[in-house]
Image (cartoon, rainbow, N blue to C red; front, side):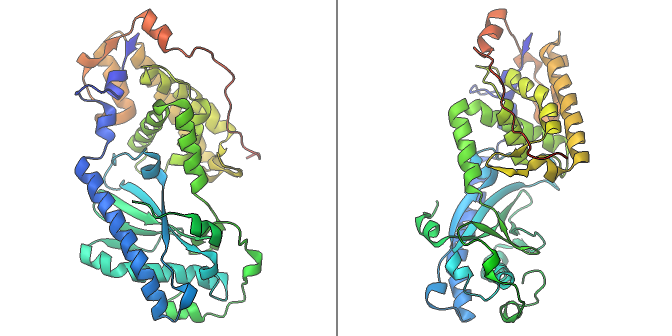
Length: 380
């Protein structure tokens, strides 16, 4: 049996996949600075714009922020196929529900939030030569370079939770902000919960959505199961990005599916990944729910046809990786691994190790208990 783990991840100064997936220090610094610039502009700009349109007193409040997604989970990879792929940073902006409810109707409030934030961002975007996109239903997108963009979802949060949040290191259907604020639609706030975190949506006004529990869940999973799980998620995302230029299984779907079947393999990322790939097709076909919300099926969101395509593709990846680990020649092993990850996997057969029986046994989980699947709650 061969050991491909040194080509997946190693602390030795030699080529490995994880190193290829990392953004450079300069790229990380550029994205971090852009994120901070956006935050600072929204902190100052949202109160300025709201005051300009007649909001006073408690309505003039600075938003607070919560980084979510792969940047927060530390699973951010550099883009594989660029374009169209880009590194995606999600940074949610929050206002207390008392401010959001300052308008008479929910649809106006969501529209105002988008319009105010976009107007506040315009000077920064223009000065930096960035591009502000308003065609995303659930966020404002700012393309900061060919490599990366920042998505800014907008949230309404209960006042007491807004107070607890710490600061971290025109919309569709309306031509102008004034038009949005003077709209006389008959929708009311009474049908919407005021004790929940709500996400502004350009078409559906407000939807229940809180990204914080997912971050807490994943951090807990990594704490319990080890950093190897985080690396497995990054390998899965790298394989997805190699085989899907766009679309494919979402990152949260890959995270939830992988965490449900992951078993630690000491010193053997290749075997840990092989375990997950072997079970991934069955997990996807059975159905995967949001790990913090059993009412949300992540596989239903992907769609039956796409789920089957993904399951079939992961079956193929499993065969390639299994063949690589059991190959007789290191070069053949590299060739098969490259079929999974593309050219970012180092073609270095000289770094492939031959695993002894003792090493393989040591890497085997001490006790193989029943695996807990993230089951769906409805058929389909």
